[in-house]
Length: 297
Length: 246
Image (cartoon, rainbow over all chains, first blue to last red):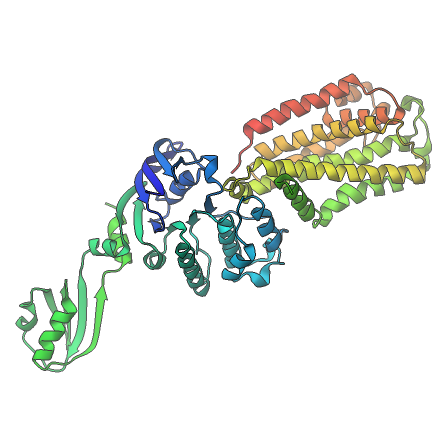
């Protein structure tokens, strides 16, 4: 059974097409990422799934209901970009108030502990830092014990430590059986957290795969650089099927290839008693995949 | 506790952390009465007032001032800010409808006006012998109708203003002429005919007439009731139609 099913979603604001044609489905218990450049239609897509916007065409089913069905509001937790609270409301008051909205709320003390906000429960919202506001926002999204949590740009504005803490928290939430839909533009975040990623560009899904699968699409190109202890003929390495190209830069050698390149090169060098000093290996990353997939024509 | 009650209490709590709000809605009206009550001419009974003293009329005006400030300045700027800051949008993702927060704001403000009314009439009665209306029910109806006109205008302002700042600016712009027509500077009964007629169709003036009627023990003026219900229905419906939640 799929938890979220989006079919041929389209949404425009006046003349501007925000989402042209987006389809994907999310399986129970997975962390599904939506990745894309600014203005790609990520937020509009999750707003339609959250029921905040009505699609112009296409169908969205969430937990067996049509998106926007009021039965979903207590089963789906949503953290939106740029949603604030009243400045004079304390963290505790906000959590207690929002707890009263749900039939089966989580214990907010536990959530606040997990999010590192325990020391701030008496602080007013207006006095919180950007990162603390963001963490409170995540807590509010999880307060109703949702089956699905939709988190839009969840670590934007967090410092690197807080970002890593939040990632741990997200993994913890998934372990409780919550399905997560994450919108992000951080490659590292998508790579670390997501089981599958839909890359959206100009309102369309341009790729849908695991993080590893996306990287492979960018090309499996690898690059090894090293300084050999003794010189050797190019053919020694260029004869290997894994090697595509060999370049010399002074005393340094650069080998470009694919497959099990590193193993093949090192084996040959070792056989001939050549030591490779200052060796580095560069592989395609999700960054490369992203640029490759969303590059303008 | 019902969600609506909890929302209303929360709004009450955070609003009362705003010293400016407390000052203008609870303190200022009492202060105004205390100052005016000590002005000798306020004890006069111009024949136009039908036996009432000037200070008697000003008790209603002082409360009307609080109602006007809430309706034109508090309510619209708070609601427009709630929209601007995505508070209404966040609520829309929960089982609670954002409209409930609007309701909580209205309830909270109404409660404040009622407390202010008790303060104003207690001080006015004890210090300056302003009579307590024979029928408190009529006074309550007058206050409720006065609030419904002002709050409906405020809701419409909140609905159409693009931001909290704009809402506040439009509210302030409307506040002074409307308060003038309600008789804050010269009581309506002493105004030239034209200004009084003009005032008949504005919300604060109509509300003030009902307050005076209740104090004098007269049956409330039909025109004033009609005008206020008209504002409630027309501005209320327009606010519902045009209200943007984000």
